[in-house]
Length: 189
Image (cartoon, rainbow, N blue to C red; front, side):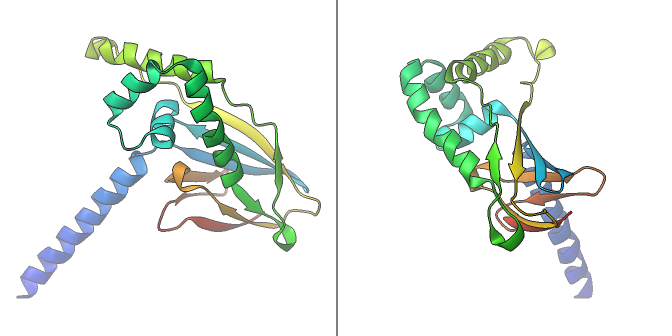
């Protein structure tokens, strides 16, 4: 009887590890936070552009259907769908600083709708290429700065569900995942 429970524990632990590995690799996004001055934090969001667009715009579609639909969508329609999504990602990244006041961000520089759509078309071309010559889509990095009116010692970080899971990186300090089970974190600087 105890052997059964031991096997069940091992099986459960293995399943949990497998699920965490799948969840961690399912969305290649990272967010790097670094304090560069008493009132400023640098934020770098790195993500897989195709995977992110798919998740943001049409998660109900298969990847193939998503690429087919959005590669061929008229640019004005694509832009009309994309703009509010990018705004929601920007506003969904919340860093509450001293006294619970949200840090304000400046300098978001997203690719244009035409650039996003061109990346989708490049992805289709890569998928049609022989398997031995396929390349992965380059990671998209977005940089911005969070500014506080008071010195930053501790912040609360929360991210929109559309970015999760995301690996949060504090260079030289720590790395951890934010996901549906742990959607916020308190960080000391």
